[in-house]
Length: 82
Image (cartoon, rainbow, N blue to C red; front, side, top):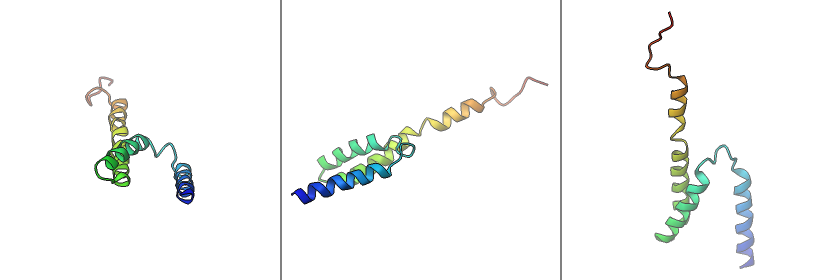
């Protein structure tokens, strides 16, 4: 039992140090929710965590293209300066 606990802690530390905050935007929250949901739906916690990470990352980056488009928009494509 101690060996399993030590291996789990070691793997969590390794995964935690490998994930950078820039790439993990939305992934950690989605993985936590997906892992719990997958575990409750039939002991598929890892599969749920992977899917939750993908969905969380997608949802976190969903607003980025709209914000970039709005900053470069000049009001409809026509210019009044001649």
